[in-house]
Image (tube, rainbow, N blue to C red; front, side, top):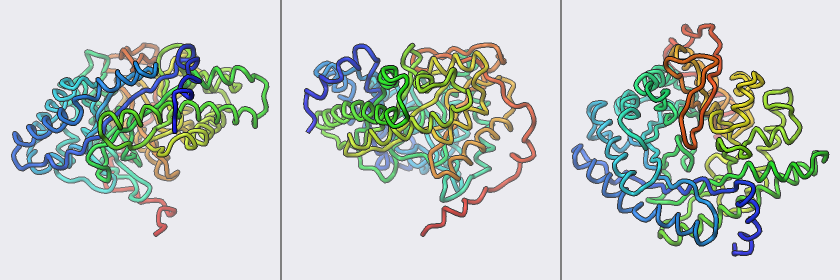
Amino acid sequence: MINVFEVNETNKMIEQEKLDVRTITMGISLLDCCDSDLEMTKKKIYQKITEYARDLVKVGEEIACDYGIPIVNKRISITPISLVGASCCKTSDDYVALARVLDRAAKEVGVNFIGGYSALVSKGMTRSDELLIRSIPRAMEVTERVCSSVNVGSTKTGLNMDAVRMMGEIVLETAERTKDQDSIGCAKLVVFCNAPDDNPFMAGAFHGVTEADAIINVGVSGPGVVKCALEQIPDADFETLCETIKRTAFKITRVGQLVAQEASRRLGVAFGIIDLSLAPTPAVGDSVADILEAIGLEKVGAPGTTAALALLNDQVKKGGVMASSYVGGLSGAFIPVSEDQGMIDAVATGALTIEKLEAMTCVCSVGLDMIAIPGDTSAASISGIIADEAAIGMVNQKTTAVRVIPVIGKGVGETAQFGGLLGYAPIIPVNRWSCGQFISRKGRIPAPIHSFKN
């Protein structure tokens, strides 16, 4: 049982150390909305989302008020739309029409994002998948709250390099279509390897086909809490350091477990998972980079950064899994540049490069996240970045992702402004040598040998 006394123990964390529940995300299956008629599909999608999620925002606000726990976002994830629209969408414009319906439903129920404008193409691509992928730039341009993701690889299937090549082009086109807002459309688009079915965090959330009709997933946060705990033991040995992170992660996750149970009970929807990721914000003191510097780095990016992040990620998982009945999603430490003031500062001073960020993704929860790159970066180079990151995920049997933003009209030394939780980012240089011939090859990179375990 989780009781109010455990919550009271976290009051200092909430009031002084920026602890919050980052998101309550309701996953909704839209498989029963499939229809051969586009208009009927749109009607079914709108009705199901607005029926199931009509009280989501209200219940989230009530729980926040009752327990004094800030709940920053209320969101929805849905079945990958390339599956839902396969029978009725004959053109990319048809998929854009579904995106508009999703946006309208999200606005109606009051959530800030809806994720699942997605395609899963790790081994091959159907005609429906291709139509959806080619519709992404237009969909991101004409909607406000719709988020998109494409899974291009997995440890079991290898990497679909045709999809990787296409996504480089799609990212660049999305940037161009939203260039009047510093190419913000790319902030709502993630390219995955080994995408989880139960991720509550945007922009990569979707409702997996193995999930129930509706579930509640909760993502907690709390980098500031961990940082404050570590500042109390500046000269501790590694054993004490690890124990402190584990204990803190346990307390943070208990708060998420309470919120998830309450949301599940009040909404009459099954509890899915807690994602115990440390998700930073642009607010000062709410930074994963600050944690790494509290561990002993002068600046993130210095030698030792990858080891420090590996330590942090592992201890967060070890502490969190004991605090919840079901842990899932991504669960660890996020390193988005634009959403983390410490990361922003490290890039601005030259301490942190895209190559070091790539090395860090080998041991963090996700990948290259919210990184602004020059607007004249080629589609092939973007595909190469995606391929590199997907290969890390494939070989290491972990989730990796790329959310890079080629800011049209801007270059290294300038800054892209996204606003809100998305923050801002200095534009980071990208290696200018070409990978065009590699990316132009067709087909798949086979699954690694260790994937054959059946």
